[in-house]
Image (cartoon, rainbow over all chains, first blue to last red; front, side, top):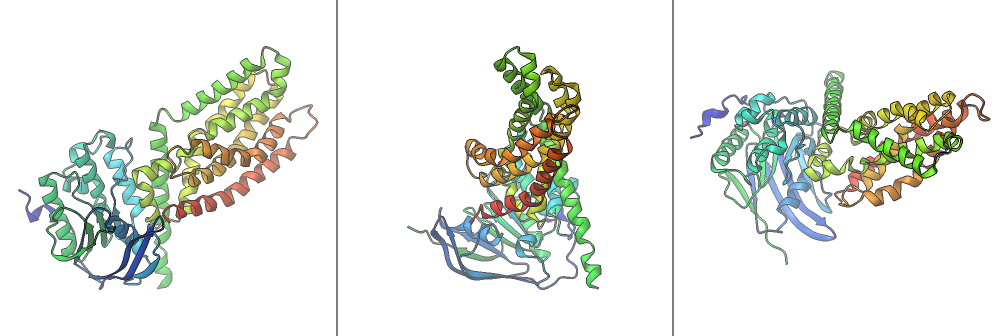
Length: 219
Length: 235
């Protein structure tokens, strides 16, 4: 059983600034086809947004647009506090690809991600983050030798090695077993308690208190 | 107050760039021996040309700078089309784009790691292969120096092609077609500098300085061109 206490090492929130992520009338095209149109939402600190919908509804496109990886063809995304850092520098994006180098070990990959993604907010040491996700025993193994679920957990461990307030998760539960899904739910819950935000696209049930955004299928 | 806030930015940038450099070197070395493989490819190209030309030592010695430079060019560009493609396929390019580190610097660091793993060993091996081709001993040093000065330009120009063909599965051929014509000036002045030695008509300094200038121009422009191409990737 995974208890809430597992992630007790996570630091409590301190000096919270009021954060808000809002999107108004978002339109995103892919290959000349409008995939997301006229989408608006407001997300406050400590809240989550679960994006659901059938295949091709634009869930991944929406997440990539929020991460700044796709240009908007209409609408605005506003992010406060306006501290100079853009949303893409304050957001963790976990896509379908695990973004891990197969020839490097799990620990090397995470140490690189920690240094690369560090926005000066701090984070957990790599060993602690790996322990949270139950990967300590494979820390020194090249990623190539990991199972799909272990690779997924290693990719998710980057959420902990560097603190970024917004988590953009595309199908975070894919390839995870029941225990890992429960573990991720606990970690996501703790992130929300600390005042973070989560936007997750999923087909599965994520037990997150928060809004749900249902995207319709497009012909 | 403002200055106090800005101060921590540059150590963070330095840390992320050095982490990227370490990762590139590690990944590069673990792929099939990295360094040694490009030198072996270099050796094979040199040997093949020597076999094709035949056992005319005087002729081989005369065209040795050209053989070494063409082989060096091809060995540098071999695998360079994967410079960004591997990152694109495994999703880490997305992370590099959202890291907050300027993309131009990321391109530059990746080129530096590639050159240390490819161009530098080639230049170091060149004098030995020059002896094989009966290159006059007075020219051994100029071949090495010209390769040290010229191969960074090849890596940097290649990075533009690698960025342009990043999303193409079989972009290797298109990469070569795009990049090889751009390498012509480097090749001309590289061979001219390599062939200049004691007793030659052209002084070494003239083509060598132009070669250095070409590398500096590539250094100043290629990271920007490659970064623009990479940013266009998602649109």
